[in-house]
Structure formats: C-alpha cells, structure tokens
Amino acid sequence: MEAIERFEGKRTGRESDLRDGGTGQPGTALACHGVTKRFGGLTAVSDLTLEVSRGKIFGLLGPNGAGKTTLIRMMLGLLSPSTGTIEVLGERVPSETILPRVGYMPQSLALYTDLKVRQNLELFGRLYGLSNALLQKRMAKVLELVHLSDRGKALVSELSGGMQRRVSLAAALLADPDLLLLDEPTVGVDPQLRAEFWDHFRGLAREGRTIVMTTHYMEESSQCDEVALLHQGRVLVCDAPARVKEVAGAATMDDAFLALVRDRTRNGGK
Amino acid sequence: MKASRTLAIARKSLGQIGNDRRTLAVIVMMPLVLILVFGYGFGGQPSHIATAYVNADQGPEGAALLAHLPSGTLDLSRVATPGSAYDAVHSGEDWAAIVIPANFSAHLLAGNATLTVYVDATSPTVQQAVMGAVESAIQGLFSKGAIRAPVVLSPSFVYGSGNETYIDTLAPGIMALVGTFATTMLAILVLVRERPLGLLERLLATPLRPSEFVAGHALSLTVVAAVQSVVLLVAAVLIFQASFAGNLALGFLILMLFALGNIGLGMLISSVSRSEFQAVQMIPFIIFPQLLFSGALFPIDSIPVAFRPISDVLPLTYAGDALHSVLLRGWGAGGVLWDLVILVVYSALTLGAATVLVRRQA
Image 1 (tube, rainbow over the protein chains, first blue to last red):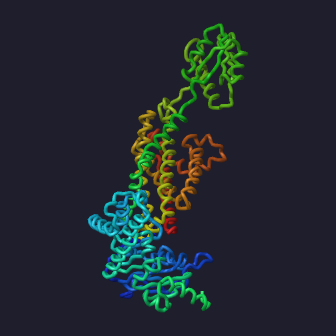
Image 2 (image 1 turned 135 degrees about the vertical axis):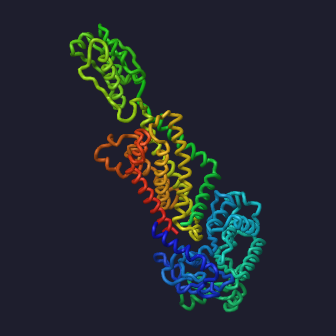
Image 3 (image 1 turned 60 degrees about the horizontal axis):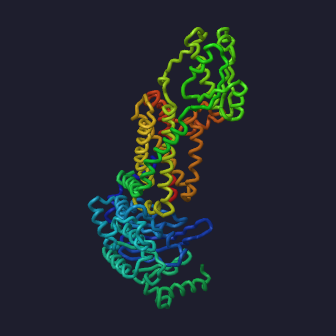
C-alpha cells in the first residue's frame, strides 16, 4: 500500500503541468515503436510500428484476431508489450498521467447493467474528476448525441443491445478527452445514427482531438483520415484510405485488404 | 489515493444494491433469519425430556426428591415397577427412567441410599441434562430437612449473574458468525461480476487506481455491514432479550472491524475466481471451519486438543472472543487489545492482497 501511495502522490503532483500541451513530440498523439505482444506461444502483435497525428481519425482494420484489441489495450497500459515502446500524448505507456485525458470504449459492453444509464455516466464522470455542474452538463450533451436523453433513468439492462453500445460510447466521450480509443464503436448502431456519430467524430477531430478506432467494417473506414490494415499482428499497410485502395488496385477496402493479404502470402512474408 | 474516486466507487456499489429491492431485502433479512435460526434452533438447553419414574419409597424423601426436580427439564410419567421403567427406556419411549427404591428414606438417613437412573446415553446432551436434573434434586434434598450435605458448594460469579440464558452467552458468537456469512458473501457477489463483463478493465483505464477500487468497495460494503450489525444487535436484545453487561458501541465497532476483514476476504476470493460459480463454491470452505473451530458456537475447550491450533488461525475466533469479553464480561477496549490488533492485521492483509490482485487482473 505504501508504495502505491508514493506512486500516486507523484502522479497528482505532475498532473497539472502535463495538462496543457505537454506532449513530447508536438503533432503526434500516439506512437508505437517495434511493439510485439506474445501470449505464451501466440504472437498477437508482431514488431508493429505506427504513428498517429493529433486531430486525426485513425482506423485500425483487420479481421478478428488481427491484434486490434490487444494493441488498444497496450495503448492504455492495461497490457504491457513483450518488446517495444508505446507513447501516448507524449508519455511513455504505462503512465497514469495520461489516463485522465484518454476516453476508452471497450469491445465488451463494460457497463453496470444493474445501474441506470445516468448512474453509469455519473460513475465515469466522477472517476474522471468532473465537478457536479460540469458532469450534469456533459451528461446532457453526450446523451443527446447518442439519442438517449429520455432514457437516462432506465436500467442499462432494460435497453436494447444497440442502445447499450450507445451508452458505452457516451461514457467514453463524457470527460471530453484529448484521445479517444474506441474498440468497435459502431457495432449494432443503425446507419442514420452511425452517420451522426461520424459527424461528431469529425467535429472532435477539428477541435484537435485524436480518435483511434478499430472496426472490421472495412467500408466504414473510408471515412478515416488514415487507416492501418492489420493481419496476424502485423501492419500490411498504413495510409489514407484512398491511397490504400490505389496501391492495392482495388475499388473497395474489402478488396484492397484481400489483395494485400494475397501479396503478403505470395511473397513468403508472414 | 483520491477520496473522490473512492467515493464514486462506493456510490456505484450502493447504487447497485439500492436498485435491486430483493438484494436490499436480503441484506436486512439475512442477519435476522440467521440469528433466529441459530438462536431458536441452537440456543436452548434440552427441556421436556420424556422420563419415566417409579417411586417405591415408603418414607417422604422419595416424593421430596421428585418435587426438587427442576421444572421444565423432565416430562415425568409414572410406571409401576423398576422393570417397566427399564422397558420404557429400552423401547425408546423415554430417554430416561428414575427408580426410587423401597426404603429410600431410611437408607438416606443411614447414609447408604442408592438411586438408579436408566438413561439412553446415545445423546450425550440429553444424558447430561437428565443427570444434571437428578443431581440438582439430590442437592435440594440436603438443603432442608433432617439431612445436611457434608459439602456445600458455593459458586461466586466473577462475570455474569448465573442467570444467563443460553442465548445470552451465544449471542456474541452468533453475531460474529452471521457477520462472516453476510459480508463475505456479499463482497464475493458484488465483485465477481466486474471482471467477466469487462468492467474492471474499463475502470482501470480511467484515472481510477486499484487501491481506490478496493477502498471504495470496502467502504460501501462496510455501510451494508453496519446496517446488518445493527439488525443483529437489535434482534439479540429485543427478540432474545439477551442481557449484555458491556458496551454496545464497542461491540458494534468490533463487528465493523471484523466486517472490513471479511470484505477483504470476499474480494480476494472473487478476484481468484473466474466465475460466480467458482466463487460461490468457496463459501463452504470459509463458513464451516469457522462454524466448528472458532469457539463461536462450541467452546474451543470442546474441540479435540489436536485440532485446537486451527482455531488460532481463524479470524472469527478473535472477533468472537472480543465480542464475548466486551458484551458479556463488560471489558473495555484495553482488555481485548490483542483481539483488536489481530483483526486490524486481518483487514490490512486481505484488503492489501485484494489490491495487489486487482492490479494484476487488469
């Protein structure tokens, strides 16, 4: 316990000077250098290097098991890489100083289904240190965004699967973070609302916030500023969606992905 | 550690309990039901034991002996002969039979009277109760009349009045035991759901630290334990008319300190369990050794000597001992300092270990 307190004491002491633009490399929100993650004999992420600029919407694409979720969890410091380093908002991960500035929406629901929608949001707001007044304001805003303003008093367990995902997204957006890590944010969300989410994401990016999201809906990723195609823990390509299609000589992202995987296998690379 | 985040977690888990009326009801009802079950089911001396008797004495002492039997312990039914008295026990109709022989009064005056008691000793508790009743009747004979006992037993109570009922002496142990049940189980059930739903991971991706997560839950569950302890104390006093010589507030504090350790234990169990199913299976391992070896219900002196060291490592032993000394003997905190130190160490160890495990799970 004592060691923890010391560590935490150090953290709170440094919080304020990092708040305003203390990034090591201006312009870079997130950088992975040679990151590998092994689970026993399985290599989930293999020698991965990528960089995400501030104010961009960055898509991590790939089929199930490509290593997207593992990568996101390493960015948060929930897992540590076997080798390599990750920097988030200018801090080497794991770092507790960045957590107040990062919003995370996991792939699993990760909400208290036995709590009301507002009770869930209140919990996350308080954990991020929002004052009561600010919390009420932000709650109203994010609930409006996900079209659930009238369901604040409903238990999460009473909502449909899609609505639950929307509450989860609301929780990630609540503290107005500088970096959003969204793991499959649009699963189960209908097309009209999905379009509204994208409008909102672009608005956030314009304000200088960075969004990293995973998806296995390849077409949706055309709306990202930049995408990385992951296959078996490696980056096949990392570029603007239009460039990716051009390089692969494909009309759609799906085709581009298949073409790139085929190339990789033919060239003997793993 | 930051208080606001700790409080946020505490409010969260109280909210979970508050939203669930059934859990809310169980929190209040469980200690009440358990103290009723233990208090009534367990708390009595045997009474109204079916007993046959035959009085062949021609003098007055045989009848006087029967009159001195403590009321309520034995249900007497008269039989004709010593033979049928034996048969009554042998057939299983009665637990015991008292045979007052002919010339009992005369032999008593001569100092060589014999009284035969047939007993079914397959139930030691019943046997002890029957023999105790008969011995007290014999003492009664000597207290007045022509014959005087050569030795007069004069007990002087260091603690207690000698009028304590069974529930009085058991109440502290039952309270400590019920506290173990209720808080450990609740801690397990509240926490074991966090991990499979991905909640723990998400919480640890916020500024929340593992120590705050553990402290927040400990806080909310202590509030619940406080409610349960009040229910226990009130039930013991009102329903069972337990008469406590000591300081109820200090007793309450001991229960709270013990609850804190049990919450830590529940958190430990839930963090090493992969599912609710696994966690619930651990509960008997916690309950039964404490039930039997802690001295809460059975005095430690009744455990075989070889097993007594087990009681030394059970936290309930110390909580029960402290409550016994405070509530029944009327001791102050100074008298139970050693127990309190052990309970503090217990809480610190379990909560500390739970923090380490939460950190690892992330």
